[in-house]
Amino acid sequence: MNKTFRLKTKAFLPNILAVVSCCVFLFFFTSIQKNTPKENLQVEQKKVLIFSKTNGYRHESITAGITAIKKLGIENDFLVDATEDSLDINSQNLNKYQAVIFLSTTGKILDEKQKLALQNFMQKGRGFVGIHSATNCETEWPWFINMIGATFISHPKQQIGKLIVLDKTHQSTDNLPSIWERNDEWYNFKNQNPNINILIKVDELSYTGAMNTNNGHPISWYHQFDGGRVFYTALGHSIEGYNDPIFLKHLLGGIKYAIG
Image (cartoon, rainbow, N blue to C red; front, side, top):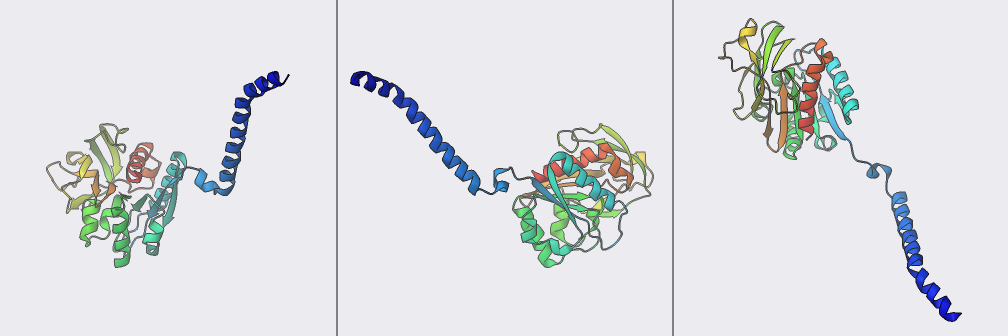
């Protein structure tokens, strides 16, 4: 009997050890879960900040743009905050975001401390999106001009023009038609950064009032600058434009690029 008991005990010992090990693992795993904040157990969502302060002309489409970008965030799993307060452009606040979106900003809108915060933000490898008149703000700040890629000069009356997509490998253009007709303001630029990667140009023969730049008229571009990622589109003048699914795909791709 003793021999038989020893054999049975020996046979069941590995199973007993396995059960004990499993119980110990579950105990420690449960303890970790109880002591770990719930937010740390989830994948952190990306977050962007829309900045739409104007110190000059103000586009009526800004409200529509904010609404459209917030909707894109809900549909594509990123969070969106919006502000027009320059005091929010500070290092502590910007640390919460992967990208900043200048939505039709105009004029001088940042002081020296806020400028430094934006520079530090980009140098940390974050992203910047400029929409429409974002090229018409901080026009005397060389770093910003090089970062956003150009400075606005003027535009003819709003009208239909023909866009030519030059690069369809970027996520802001991969869903666009090669030739895209659109009603918008066709911005003219100066101080163009030679290092930008041009995505879209407008055919100057397709509308009236062009400045005759030998048909090399960029409308949207991207580049890496000072450690960060920059996307700009001159489109987005009208309220109606923010209901255009083609334009919204273009804008979403640019935001995703900036978020990284």
